[in-house]
Picture 1 (tube, rainbow, N blue to C red):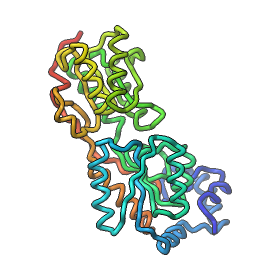
Picture 2 (picture 1 turned 30 degrees about the vertical axis):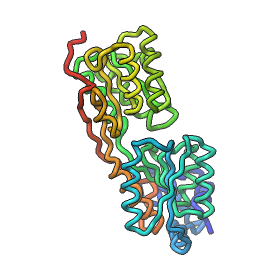
Picture 3 (picture 1 turned 180 degrees about the vertical axis):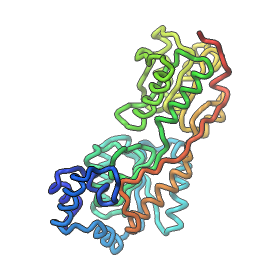
Picture 4 (picture 1 turned 90 degrees about the vertical axis):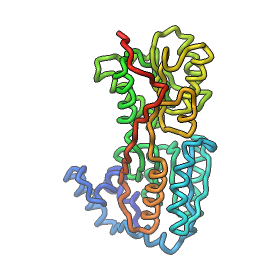
Length: 336
C-alpha cells in the first residue's frame, strides 16, 4: 500500500506540497501539482486508507506533549482538551518532553506503534522533517507553536502580531529605549515574538539594539537573571517587553531588588496572561491567549483526523488574542 512518503519520493517534492495538492490548496504551481498528481496515479495512492486503518485500531487514548510540567499556562488548555476528549469517550495522557527532542521522539514512536490514537504537541521540538513525516501518516496536531507551510495541523494565535501590538502600545506610551527578554529563538514561537518586537520598532524608525535584547530560559529565574544582566550592563532603557509572563515576573523581581519602581521608572510587559499576572504588584500588562479555546480546537481537530472525517493536514487555525492593559505598563511619559 502506497504512503504519502512514496508520493514524496516519486514526485521529488516535500510532504507539505503533497498535502497541499491532496487538499486542493491554491498555493501550488501548476507544473508541481501535475507532477504530484502523476505520482499519485502511478502509485495508486489513496489518502483515506490511513483513516480506514485507524477506524479499526483504536485505543481511545491520546497523548498531550508539554514542554514542561507545572507550567500554569497549560492548565486551562488541558481543561479544554479534556472537555472535548471526555465527550467523545477519549482519555488523555500528559507527558513532559522538557523540550528534549529525544524524549519527544520516544513519544512519537509510541504513536507509530499504535499505543495511542494521536498526539497534541505543545513542544514541537523535533526536526520539522521528522514531524511532517509522522504527521503525514498519523494524527498529530501542534498547538501554540506556529509551523508555516507545513502538513502538520496547527492551532495558535498570531504571535508576531501580538508581540508587535504589545511593543506598539509601549511606543505609544512614549518609550523609545525598550529592552526585550525572550525565550530561545530556535523555537518558532519565540522567534515570532522577537520578530514582532523588531517590526514594531522598525515601523517607527527606531533601530532594534542588540545590546538590550536578551535570550533567557522561559521561567521566572530566566527573567530575573536576564534583567540583572541588563541592569549590570549600564544600558539605558525605560521599558522591558518579554515573551512570557514568567519572564516578566522575574524581571520585576530583579528591578524591585535594585530599588527601581515599576512602572514609574521601568515599565514591564508579559505575554500569555497566566493566573499570577493579575495578582502581582503591580498587576501585569500582557497578551491574553484564548487558552480554553486552543485546547478545544486542538482536540476537535485531532478527533477529526483520527476518524478520517478531516483530512486537511495543512490547516492553520489562528485564534484571536487580547492585549490586557494593567498597572505594570504605567502611563504616558515624554521620553525624548
